[in-house]
Image (tube, rainbow, N blue to C red):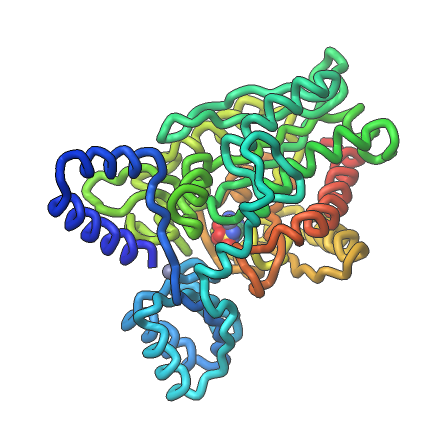
Length: 438
Ligand code: 0X9
Ligand code: ZN
Ligand code: ZN
């Protein structure tokens, strides 16, 4: 719905500006500069369909072409297939029509979210929020995460250091935190990133949690201690820093980067379609207005470039690549750009199976696992496939909680359990890697 609201918003403000006196105009302009008007989602509903026949798939595609639907999952309409859940959001003005069409079709559907705006407002509790301090059980904005990085690294300088690996389209710094016992020698490493997709807030929250856990259990937890003694972790808490900031300031449902596209009114590239891995061949769009726009060229996005350069630079030492997304509860491994199985498919499959078993042992959270192309959908240009083809043979995408009850709006009360269980999966993978160095 993004497009629609933005257009409405700008028409309204042009009207206001014309009818106001100069003084008011100045006041209005400075107010707008100070805090961008947030996009609202009043009356928008999130639906779930499960098309069980080819006709039903056709119906869903037809619906998407008559009504402006925001797909939440899968993220593009050509990825809708028989027997897969389709979650999508519909603007208030189209809710009745959608419901009528659904009733007529006889398709089974659920309303996942009655009112998106209410859900967004409920997700974060602004009353108890303080500007300066971070929390591991709340979502933190970009400034808070950056302040957290500086402070945490300073406080644990025996294990942590950080550096800027590049800047974003809008000029924000992108940081990597290095975690490991300083031995004076170069060690093998595991790379993990969060926040490729802006609206998947649980992902940066997990990277913060991971750093905290690693530091606070070093010396007491034998697995973590062994890991940090023999290896380093490189953690990028937020890759898509512009998009993440934009989800806090303006549009909670933003996914892509914020770069301007020559010749288009739409902004942003899907940073998980922009890598040099079968780029833009399947499950990606060359339309700049699409949520899965692959970009004008490979690595067009500065954020993708920054991470790709970092990984290329440390290629010899990085033994595993982990990237955190949400939602769907899946552990995915290459490939997604082709149905071909990777040479060490059996090994990755076993590793994923062990990881999700370990994850489930805490709260019973069920994950599925397998190669991306068959487990979620074929989609080229992803970071996991690229890292794998760089020679990093342990490469995983995690899709964290939930399976759609809240989707991207996972309540803060679930941050702790989600991070705790995910920690078990990551430790499982890392422990395997440290014992199978290559
Ligand atoms: O589509 C994606 O980029 C990921 N799912 S999400 O809902 N978080 O957007 C899945 C990525 C799987 N890997 C590749 N497609 N390479
Ligand atoms: Zn919408
Ligand atoms: Zn994602």
